[in-house]
Image (cartoon, rainbow, N blue to C red; front, side, top):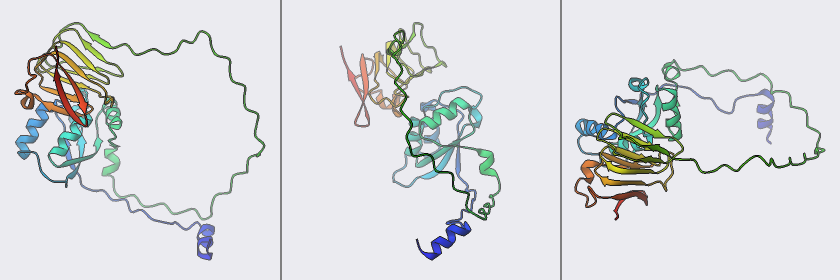
Length: 268
């Protein structure tokens, strides 16, 4: 340690300073959560998806849907915005559930009031360094004996799937948190089913199915008749306009994520 360093340590002089300033970011105000509607809105606003690596930083503003209780597929939303050369760096507003979903997708949740406040003045460093804490007795304490196993405690079993026996009608949004989902009927156009695990649809898929919302890359989507508006696994998605001419359209299929791409396999 040099004399200068020792002097700085004694006087408590700061090693750096931070000048907090607000930056103006583009706000993407979300009024809908349906990916197909969002895709159409972005296409109407920007035309075809942008080409190039440079993207404009933005925040996703959830103020308009904070009271709706709508589930948001943040990984798919981030992917969609990046297609139009927007780079989400965080989320503002929204309800607690939406903020939890955003954090689960590695999106910071910003305090909008703090961001709008005037730059803070850095606090002066303390005049002297804090007193050192007393050194603990280096003699280790004996480790406690392991507790006897509880004979009544049973090992946790697999989580049962969410089972839906009735048709999922237009406008309905259902989320199987920490579970697979089994739909014993049809998922209608305009309906949306989401699961952290896989989704099994014993009927026609005419709406949206998003599996792997809990970032389970091995999640799959099964359906008896493949006619979706949108399919998604772990945020990677395709819409019905891209799939309408797919050879598997209208057939019994399984959808899986392979090397970051959605693959649709028809099967008998």
